[in-house]
Image 1: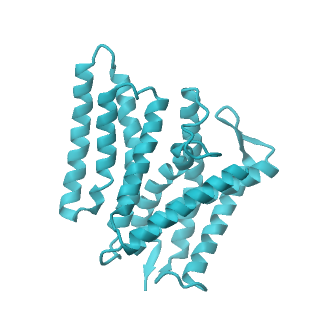
Image 2: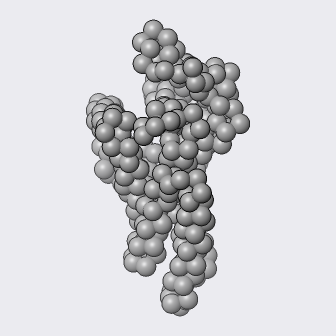
Image 3: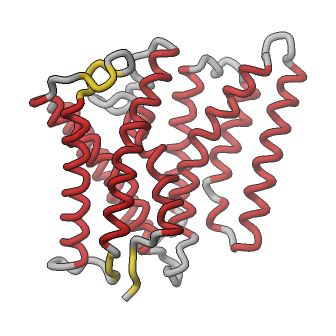
Length: 289
């Protein structure tokens, strides 16, 4: 447990440094950091699914995943065209690869490669979309957009941390023993309660006593987003557990001691970020003063 906590602390410090520099000096730094993390996550997934030996698929998928993370920074009349073009080019490139390797690469494997890339690239893209395309942000630095990005991580990690500690000390009833034997019903409930409570506490402190932000929160919308995202977080965690079982691996990597790989740490974030992005379009969480 100590290794897991220390590893998480180091990760949080790195994230804070990146986010701080991003809103003070380098507005593109978040795009670069997200592109790197997305490519690392994709690498782990391609290794797990045995695609890493196909250089053409690896290079094409990495290029598409990295490039798409910079698209939201472009003006409104350009980014949609770039996004569409990137998707079409990647789609055609995969089929060209299959035509050149049709004796070894079957269409089912091609579909899996496409799904793996979309599974990684699009959720990270949704975070950057919230950062760059928030209508209330003005100027070079996007403070409200960054708050929404941070919220995605808080929703996922508060749920995960609550589930881990409650499940460790109080867990008795297995949640999905055939998918993830260590997860318990008590842990899931604990993660849900922890997420709702801590998100509310952080929101209250930042907009109230500490006055660290210059905006208000729509508490009803935040509650709805938190409840849905906490449930989605568990679904994301279990979904990646199924992938690990399908390919008979314990962890996606070893880059984070006590946690595993990038995907082991970002599995729930990958599912939560698109949900927050879409829900925030219809239920705005932040109110500009």
